Image (tube, rainbow, N blue to C red; front, side, top):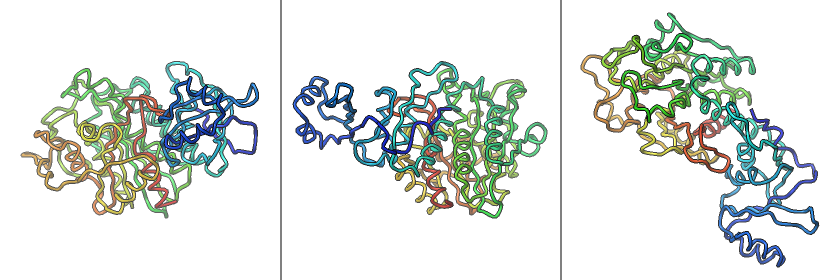
Length: 460
């Protein structure tokens, strides 16, 4: 893991290069105030004042220089100066004016490298100085949590199965003196039949399990955080095409988000009783695979007609939600790379967000806007509940009509969510298809910072 703490340091007046950030609307006036040699140099570099323009500006002495960035993002954006670390040489920097603020996160994440399989290029540190030392710890924790999601999702499925997710949870438990419980084998088949059904076709060393972590004072409000941990999704007997399987290492992205959020909760010692639940499985194909048409038992007691083995994430989450309810939580939030329909509707950047409580919905959406981690609410539309009807069981897992796939998946989960308890379901992509400053192509955390900001505001 990148040593983020070394990259954001208190400003004690130590020598540093300056970074000057100029808004495009102010660039013409800024340029007029520069000496002729600087204006000529910028013209030669084709710096015209459009957003994204960058330049090295020489000072009076031969070895003196500063960095110029033309940027139209405001000071609340984490990505305001995220383009700078990869363009600047190793060294120490400070902003010429204004405080670092949220931009510290982008500065850190721009220097994160996933180097499990290939040596990182240019890992030399670029250190940023801040006049607000009190913000450093929180910024570093956010960077670490985001990097955790990215690293877990980027890891190939050969190295990130149910057992490896258990190891990640065990690391968290040891670091924060939490209690870890893992249910597998016969106990899983008896107590969590949908998790067992989805995962039983996998090889023995990738056997399904329910991973649970509990932390905090039992007197504090109980918060359940659940993450879909499908470590690879072949689609089961309703097999995906090769193109559909290409990125299915990321189908445990919900679990990665849940682990990261749990790390933030425990790292800040939030006044909650945390209950982390990760149903960890591989949706594989073998003679023991569950079949289309099978009727599955559930921990809740409902029966589910399996109409599509590729709609497996909602099945494992259903049993986990039932377990969460048994602890009498005050709030439940789940993360899942659940439906392609959500991506068709909202693209990669916006997690489809379903909430059964208006106050929680308002808090989540406001937090997302505040920390620039946007969410988009979709409806738990009661009118589509009929789509889940089965002729032979209590409900189906996937309607045949193809309508409102993200909504019907959320409605399925609602059948298992704690009645009368505020619950949010984030259908997130967990993958960035195109690189942006501070945000490389690959695994990505969407909705993590929004969820953390909401929890911190409620329980901090």
